[in-house]
Image (cartoon, rainbow, N blue to C red; front, top):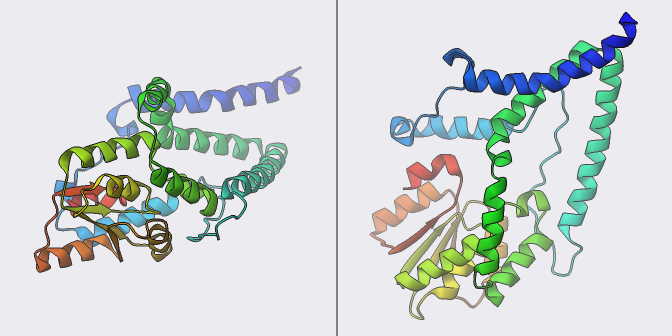
Length: 280
């Protein structure tokens, strides 16, 4: 009887560990809680160190010890008319999911302590990365209301969005901003009527399409993007529009603009988040 109770109790422990971790993080003494994130003001003057730390964080944030992470796809743009990259990504993720399930099942049979340890690590990972997202269910209802109540995106915006979702690997395409955000951006541009607009971090050009679609006829949009693959696609999708593209690190381009005396009366900033303070 004692042996038959070991596995159920172990599984119960495995289920309770993430919950216990959450309680300790929220209600425990200060030493158990995550340190606060320092503001950009404290980091000014330490730009290289901040950039290196941000890169290291991006490289390790989604990796759990012992688990096999999916390999990141290189920046890729497929030819028009290709099969959807989203379908390919779903199939690829299912293969990785099956391999991981087999590994965990084997670990559970050979080393229950190690198995429970990985469940603990996963619970910690969920606390660190998903807690806010899991708490946003009411906001999803608000988002659906905003989308339903908003003016639909323009044909140009739809064309850029659909091309991104079809021709760019899904794990990268999913970073495109939402339609309601793009429409808000377009509305703000239409109200401001800028002559010189700047889009920092244009990706495949979806937000840029919202801006350029609302610009006055004599206005010009300048788009910055560090990845030449995305710049190439964005310039292809916005061909014939009043948009120019600069490829390279945004901080260097902005310093050059400052030296040249260039001025902009509308700026959209959606680039690598750790550097937003520096761009500003």
